[in-house]
Length: 336
Ligand code: SF4
Ligand code: MG
Image 1: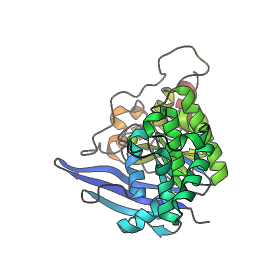
Image 2: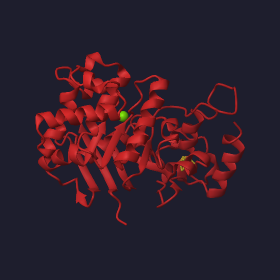
Image 3: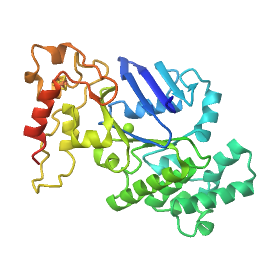
Image 4: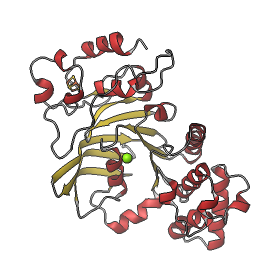
């Protein structure tokens, strides 16, 4: 059937003093209800920008959007600010990296959780408070009756993150976008928050987009993974496929920087040298070629001269043949 969220050939270009930044440059993906998509890449890969465009939270004056984003059949790229505002909260909600930027210090936790509910459902203040207590309980805040009137500064970092999740769930959204939701937290709390999101998805049945630079975060959480580089998708597959048999040199690099299970050597196996390219003047051909260790396996100057495309389904955008990739993977990446 028709995907719940469908992104087609999306381009998000910013005008800056120095020229046009092609932050997202031809991105397509689908997401079904009740599934979690992990969008993985370094900062500057376009993953956050993509999701701001989905939510309609980009700077409209300085941004040109091309292509299509449909949510439940409704086109978002041409929706008015008013339509988007209705959709945000009701149909889609965002969980930010840092709860302190999402929560206002001036209002109680309970009021901030209840407000979207009041706004979008016309519920009374009293009902909104009941809803807030209920959600605080769901996200695992002990004694929610006593904490609902607290201010954000009275919560610990992990509790604030939980409160922000409660706020996002206020109107029972169908799509939840979480941008590096656990980066600011210590490892134990991180795991608890990811578990919580998983449980809540079971209960609420929403689709989740999990944006992260860390493949480890999506390993236990996402059904599917989209790896982004320089504003494009370079690899797509189920989480199992991408983690067990990654196909793109950039993904190999990302995996190489994950903690190793079967070795006590500390350095990453295949670190990615250099840094993400400027999107003012993106590299020609494959945008990864200045950092790729395998260009000599590809004949001619194809890596620097020809942009590899991403086929539908399980795929990687790379000129290496499937056999070459498998060989490199077996010889270089796997023995760790
Ligand atoms: Fe590396 Fe060439 Fe594949 Fe790009 S197309 S990832 S440069 S081998
Ligand atoms: Mg980001």
